[in-house]
Image 1 (cartoon, rainbow, N blue to C red):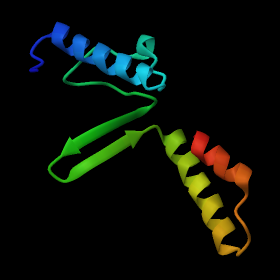
Image 2: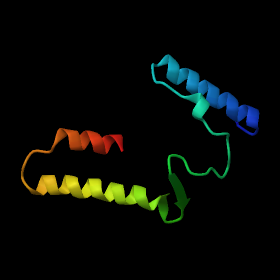
Image 3: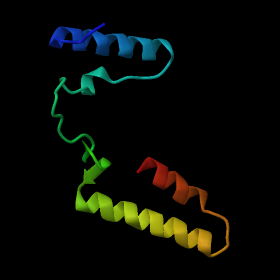
Length: 94
């Protein structure tokens, strides 16, 4: 099936969503963005693809928070103790 129209793209999205729902995976179609060749930010992140590979941009606050989570986890590992389960849960949620 070649998707050359907006209707074809929406039909493919609908088929995907109904299949995922059948398998028990929730899909929030009301949160889906319209199809685009140049999508914008989603959840504060923009993925870029180029000859050098795939890159991601994000807001500075989000980047600082990610670095802090990595530093905290690294500190826990280097201290030789067990990793705090709550810290790992928080990192996964982020």
